[in-house]
Length: 186
Image 1 (cartoon, rainbow, N blue to C red):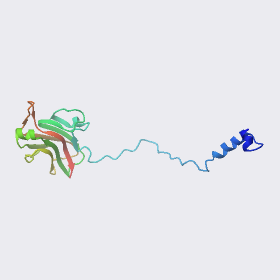
Image 2 (image 1 turned 90 degrees about the horizontal axis):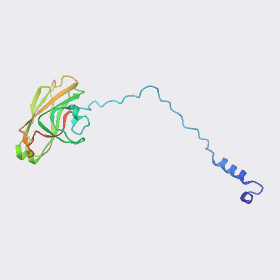
Image 3 (image 1 turned 90 degrees about the vertical axis):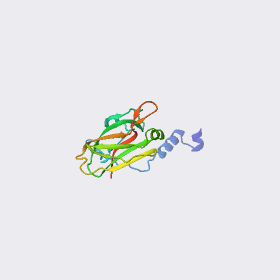
């Protein structure tokens, strides 16, 4: 019927087979080369030599670095209140070329209630005093760590004594509103 109309004397099945066979030509392309991966474990990523120098309060492992006097908060919160003597332990991979780093915030309410604030900072038993902070807002404080204060790679103890305390309207006594603490490369 239809095949007789298109090509006289040929059957429709033969025409269909011819169309199918000629339309599936891959064009002579070979399959792509296969790559065999070497056996064994995956190679390790090179670690960042400066990773872990800083503890942000939003870090999932922040609690592992807090040694005391930092109040709890909701998971992932970027800021946490501290008491008057927060303490931390940070594992450092280097011993030289470090700055102490502290990021905290002073609100207008804190400033009105207690006036300017000072932080006495102790690193592995060596201490220094920050300047007095007398304005509201975020503070990023850095200070070079003298050679010898960090003797070898590994755990470093940081203590901060806050003076004067902030006696908040909720009846609590607080030290600072902390975002992050630790070290950074100079």
